[in-house]
Image (cartoon, rainbow, N blue to C red; front, side, top):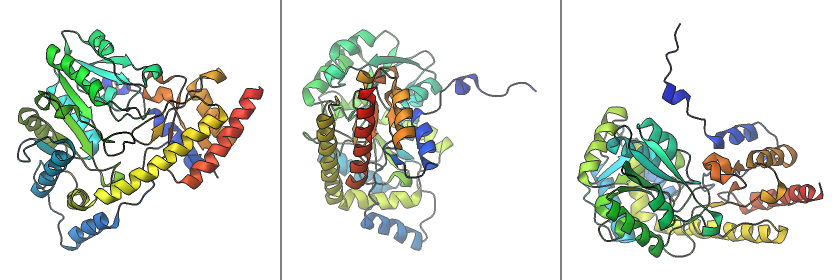
Length: 388
């Protein structure tokens, strides 16, 4: 029998995150700091709305673009947080998580041979989605000395006459890096000058610890050049509800909706009703979780400082990205040895791009109790490495 599998798909590497997650699930007394999933339960008023929707028999398809009430609330949310006006009728699409929005956003604009610029380290789905859409990924290796921010000269050097879009992954997974207004303004000037698009993944926009997040779409002349991606998983502790959204010019949204229509039909109806309550009544919940994450962030940074482990201060998301180069081990070796000897799971930096070598990602979307125990084990591990 001949090989019926797609060469493009079989060439893709599995996610480097899941490997350690799968191992730790079968290891007694192990602590996982590897998965980017909030440890909070979805707030009760959101769950109640989902339960009420089921009790009322609201189990039908919604429109392809999503419930009108939800799209209106998304428009209100973006207006009050970013000052951007989106038309809920033709500029907003409700998706199955932010990941679907990334996938169909790229597929809606890519022609074979187009180039997609991807700064790394960054979320594991960008590069595979670009490849599956028929694009050539062009990687920018971000630098720790720049706090993993995208610099104008790095962007200019990556742009060619085949460049179609820049993926802007801030607040960043895995580094926790952010882009401030002056950083975004420098990028926006180049985007407009070179006549390309931006896909701004802002799934962690509500979880920042320095200043309020600013979307590049809010800058002059950038709304019409931006596909803004966001969702409910991180800020509202709704990972399993599988709900995200995209805001974009109506010409792009129409094509994204067409793909969504054929591949998905609509996002989960129960989740959409629950998300209306999240946006209308969830600001206090988000702020409570943000403050808790910030407490954990400060705890980890102080612990790393005390043990002499180099780590730049992240101001977004719920990850830290400490440097482990001093131990002369690859990130994979360090993470594997830490898991086997101390039963603590972290993710090798290389899971997020080759330039993540020499770093590991640690999530602080876990209780302080778990973080304290994990830090004690990591400290013990590091002491042994420094004696070797």
